Picture 1 (cartoon, rainbow, N blue to C red):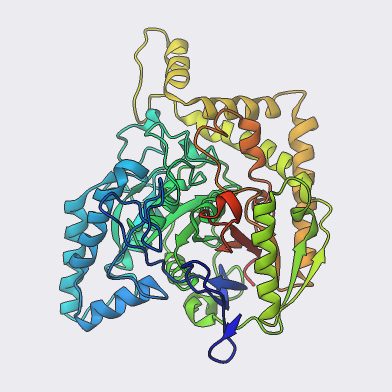
Picture 2: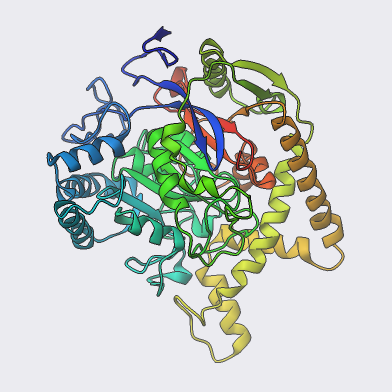
Length: 538
C-alpha cells in the first residue's frame, strides 16, 4: 500500500488492475465510507475480446473510450464539454458505436433509438453554446431499467404481457434526469418484472456478463450493470427490491447504490414489492454515483406518496447537499463486520476478496471489528414471504385488458387465465403462486404475520448496531457470477444468492457495493464486491 496526498490511500495495482482510492462520502442522505474505483481503461480488439494487458481473454468483451479519465467519467466528460474539446453529440456517438459493437452479444439494452439520442445531445450542445448549463449530467449518456416508465421508449419489464407497451408519461426519476440534461440512450434488460437474480428470465433474452460472456451479470438490474461495465453508457438507473442493484454491481465490478427507502421517488416504477422497491444507480466510480444521486434527489413534484420529503425529516438543508463534496478519508471511522455474513455458504474466493478489502480499510486508519447480528440468517425467508405476497397483489393488474398483449377468448375466465398462463414467464408465475399461498386464509398468520415480526426484528437489530458504528460491512454476494443456465434450473439456489442483500431492504437502510479485489484462482478475471450498510438519512 502506497500513500499519495495526505489523507488518501492509493492501493496496489495487480496485473493491470486499476488503482483505487479509499474515501468517505455521503450517500442517500447518510455518510458512508467507500472505496472509489476509477474507470477501467481496456482496449477492444477487432473481435472485442482483449483483457487489460492486451492479450486474448476468451469470452470477454471490454470497451475503451477516449472520453474516460482516471477518476470520475462524468466529471471528465463534463469538463471537456465546457472547455469546448468535445460536443455532447460526439460523446453520444462514441457510446452508440460501442452499443453497436457489443450489444448483440451482451444483450444489455433492449430498446435503443440512436436518432432520439442524437437529438437530445444536439439540444444540450445548443444550450451550452448559449450559456445554459443544466449541471454535470448535461450531455451524459444514461441507460434506464426497463421497468421504469419512459415516454420515448417502450417499457416492458422484460415480459411478453407488456410487449411494445409505451407509457403515456415519464417516471419521476426519468423527468429528473431529463431536467439535468442527461441523454437517455436506451432501456436496459432485466429479469421479468424484477423477479430473478441472473437477468436470464427476461422474455427478451438473457443478458451476459461483459467480464465473461459465459456467465450472468446478476439481477434483476443485470442489463443496467452490463451496459455500464461494457461502456455502452456512462451510468445507469436500476431498481433494488432485495439486492437487484447491488448484486449485479458486484458481478460486473461497479459501484451500486441502494438509497434509504423513500429517499428517491418510485413514481412511474412498475411495482414488484412496494414496501421494498427502491430506485438505485450503477456507475464506475463513487463520485459518479454521488452526481447521479444528487440529480435524482432533486425531483420534487412526484406521484409517490412513500417518498420521504426533506420537510418530513426536518432537514430542508439536505435539499442542496453536494454529495460529491462529502468525500473524506477513512481515518478515525468505526466499522463492524457482520460475523454471520462470513460464515458457512460463502465461497473462499469471495471471502479472500472481502478480507483483503477489510484489511485495506484498517490500513487506511479505520477501526474494524466483528459484530454479531443474530437475526441475519432469518432475513432471507422473511423477505421472500413478504416480497412474494406483495408481488401476487401487484401483478394482478396484468390481465391482458388494460395494456400490453392479450390472447382472445370467448369466455372471460379463459381470457384471464390464458393471458396470465401464456404471457407470464415461469419464474413470475412461481412467485405469484407462492405469494398467493402465503396470503391465503389459514396460512397468513403462519407465514405472512410471522414474517412481518421477523422484519421488525431485523430492522431493529441493524439500526441498533449502526448506533455503534459508522457502517456495517459484508460481502455483496456469496459467490462469483455463476455460469448461464445454472441458477435458472435451480430456483432455490437463486433465492439463496440474495442472502447478503435482503436484510438491507427489510430494514429500509441504504447500502452501497464497491468493487473489491478480483477473485483468485480459476475465477481470477471476475470481480467481487464489498457491501457497506449505513444509517437511514444520516
